[in-house]
Length: 338
Image (tube, rainbow, N blue to C red; front, side):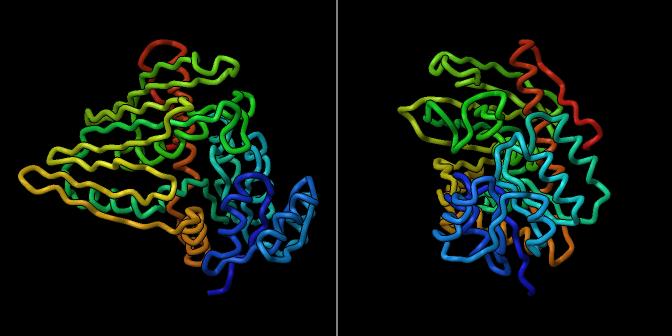
């Protein structure tokens, strides 16, 4: 298979942690150019990766001259919609970091603006390509626990200032719901189907110097009567994630939900001995997602992480914020996305 040549836009935290290496090392993938407003930062990333891509500081010039086929947008969320639109209009496939946009309206606007362009589009939810999630999804699709009836997740984090290099500020999209809960909201609506309404409460008492929530409890309700309870917590002394899905005939429990998706999957079924499934994901857990996207480009198919899925996630997140403000159950407005 001919390699997909990438332009990486943004040489900051996530590019250094995993994205740069994933683009450079994934099968049938080549990182041919890096664009960043700070040339030295871009060059430093290239040096650390042991490659010699072309370096740009102007995005339009990079689109025109880099020879790239795909663009990975790893900048702050405030620039996502603009950069993705320009990439698509230049005929480039793109994969953009989450969250997709500052709000659902912006996400829908992006989707509609480029809907007819013949490029592959995706938003990063690498956890859906983890072996832990894939085992969970396979069991659910095969009917191992019967029809989904509900589930819950506790998600904790503990940095008082930022998540990655995104500050805890609403204006820069730094809300824990936007930056962390994106993953689980995206996975839940892909497993259960889109929720019809959300009831939520938030508070900001542990970290009052920010204007973002440090604890959120949200209940999603689905047309078949199923519910999912998500709790996202700021607590600098705790870092533990648990996740469970209930079905009519059993449950799937993930005691550990590390980013790499390597924790065991515990399957409990009525009348049967519990079964533990051990899984391992590539240590660079962006890499399987990049490889899936490369396959989507070459095989002319949709990637696992579709742009439409990310848009729905943003609209559901909007409903959570509305419910927290109104104190009421809020319907999710999908704006024609379903």
